[in-house]
Structures are given as C-alpha cells and as structure tokens.
Image 1 (cartoon, rainbow, N blue to C red):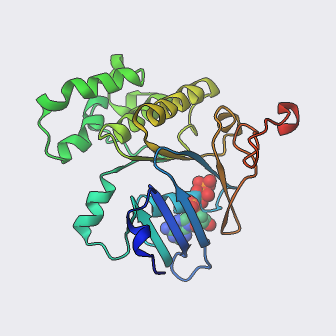
Image 2: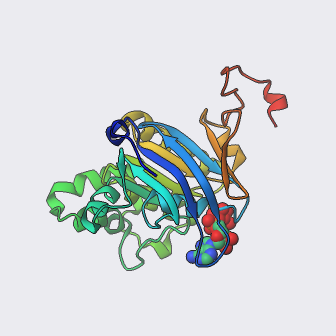
Length: 252
Ligand SMILES: Nc1ncnc2c1ncn2[C@@H]1O[C@H](COP(=O)(O)OP(=O)(O)OP(=O)(O)O)[C@@H](O)[C@H]1O
C-alpha cells in the first residue's frame, strides 16, 4: 500500500488502509479494513462476540502488526518505524483493557501514577494531578486501596484514570462498562465524553452495551465476518446521511 506525500501529515488520528489480520495459519479475522478516525472524534466499535473487536483495537494501539495493509497514527504509517519510534507513538495512546490489568501490589494511586513514573517523572511533579484525577473518577477516598479490595466498577475507574493520566491524544477502551451496572456505565460514559470534549481526545470504545451507545451521538462501526461497516445511523438513532432525528420508538 503506497500513501501519497499529501497523506503523510493529513488531519487524521488513526487510519487503516486495507488492513487484514490472521493469527498463525487461521483464516483472516479481519479482512481489508479501511478506517479513518479524525482527531477529536468519538466512535463506537461493535460486533458479535469473537467478531474481532479486541483484535482491531490491538492493531490501533500497535500491539499487533497487520498481516496485510497499513496502520497509520497521526499521519505516520507505522509498518517501517523503529522500535523507539513505535514507543513514542504508543505513548500518545491510552488504553483501557477489557480485563483492567491493574497491578495488585500497588495502590490505586500508584497504579494511576505508574505511566508517569515509567516516563521518569518525579512524584512531586505529578502527585496533585494524580490525586485530582482519582477524585475526578470518584475515587478520591479510595486512592490508597489495593485493586483486590475494590469493586469491579472501582477497578475500571482506576484503569480509566491510568489510561488518561498521560493525557493521550487517542483513548482506546475495550468493553469499559462490561463489569459495571447501568448507572456506573453512564457515569463512565460521561467521563469519556468529558475527556473528548475538554481535551479533544480521539475516543474509540468497543462495546456490546446498546444502552450505553444510545446516550451519545457518535458513529458506530460494526465488525461482521471480518469486514468493518459503518452503521447508517449514529448511535443515538439519528441518520448519518441527513442527521435527521428518527422516531426513537422505531430506532430499536
Ligand atoms: N492470540 C490469538 N491467537 C489465535 N486466535 C485468536 C487470538 N486472539 C483472538 N483470537 C481469535 O480471533 C477471533 C476474534 O477475537 P477477538 O477477541 O478480537 O473478538 P471480540 O470481538 O473482541 O470478542 P469479545 O466480544 O468476545 O471480546 C476469535 O475467534 C478469537 O478466538
């Protein structure tokens, strides 16, 4: 896949060109996927269990390389970048993993601060930021608790705080409300929206949770049989083509 000179620094956060992915000798899990996410956009990724949502997200945060095609972040094709260049790009991407991946021997505060420590920042320079962030996700009182003593929703919020503490340009979240009740799901969705609106963070969320996606007007990308299609309606039922509001009673 060749990209023209003009494409190299265009106004695009994420771009997939003809991306296919297979594991080992399996059939293609993803097949010829094209996708453009503009900076500051907010999108959903849906599809049946096993459709390849996590796989697609892993390509976006550069944990997997495509079998074919090109993944570009911030206008930079990634296939020929050095390890250091890839690490630099990855630092601009925050990830909320399906299974949280918190470190049990660290407190909430220490988990959230970890990416900053890895970057070599001194604690005095970030302590108040981390405390503020934990308060923002409603965990100001639990910052010294260890993950094993937190509820699923609380752990999820620690994972979200950790994903955003470095102020990433792109936030990728894999089933971020899979372990919380609807009320907490709405609260987490408001956090994502606030991040998107306040900082212009590009957000993409993989979810099965239809109740959640209907709370926002955002494009919905759907994986089906290895292909990615964009729904004709935004997540709240408005039409992508004309932005006409459909009758909510018929939107189901
Ligand atoms: N490391 C791997 N090696 C081989 N096959 C894999 C691997 N990871 C995922 N798969 C397979 O790829 C397919 C897509 O998996 P993936 O986890 O991307 O789907 P998903 O849409 O995220 O599913 P869910 O909604 O259940 O989380 C599945 O058939 C899965 O078994």
